[in-house]
Length: 337
Image (cartoon, rainbow, N blue to C red; front, top):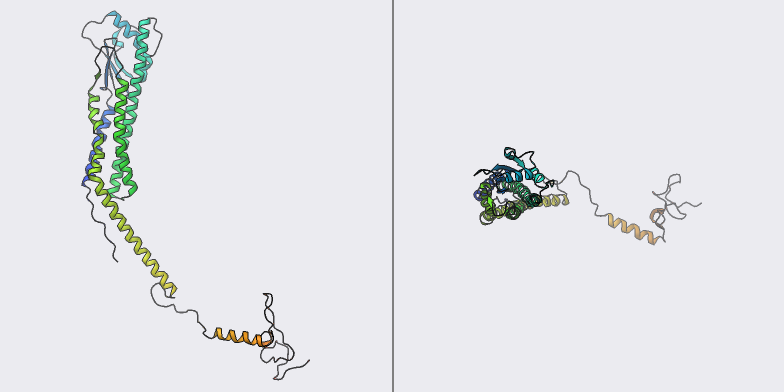
């Protein structure tokens, strides 16, 4: 029986899903590497902080002259050596900014209370930023794994384990993305001077549709790719079953030939054991003669007793013609001693 050939499986939907995963991976990379544009807030009413996931840029909002009170506030908050506002502007890391906010050497109770609030709120903002950064890296990794397993499934070796792996990662991606965005918004909304409107930058609004669109790959997979994947799995399983059937059939043929004494290529071997059809009859006659002789074995042998072989000796009064041991005279008459 000829093996069934696997039917060609369409990979258009799978290739389209690969492209979609690549596009979303690029969008997530953009969200993570842009240093600013996530959160915008004000400190001491005049210092604007443009915060990213790992970086913050401080600039002065110079719509008018800065009062001495504001300069002292900025100096104390950022732990500057003087009230020179040019020292306040610059780039900081999230940990560096937190260490400045959380220092408590200020002698002014009002400034000390404000620093305490800034320190607490900035700690939440930093946690939300790092959480989104780590989850974003995992999402990029998941997209890469989905693309790799999907390519192997449709172009190399389709397995049910690979199919389940792709589906699992595609389900995890939107869950992780939505959780990350929710956590960032929850922990970042309280930082900044009270009375100021909540400010988010371009990067944040770019990442919101990126996060919400994370459900698109799993929808595309369920609606288009899954049915072709199941056809591919069934075709490969049928082909594998045919191969196993033919291998088992050949093995059974070899066993049948060997049991019939035939060689694998056909035909009987050149030499095989001979069967004597009269062996059973001769053995029965010998046993009957032993019984008739009174318990003695035929031809001068004693019967087997106790499971030990008994060596036969010539007995008096019995003919020993042709069966006596060497050293005794052999005549046609019985010998008397």
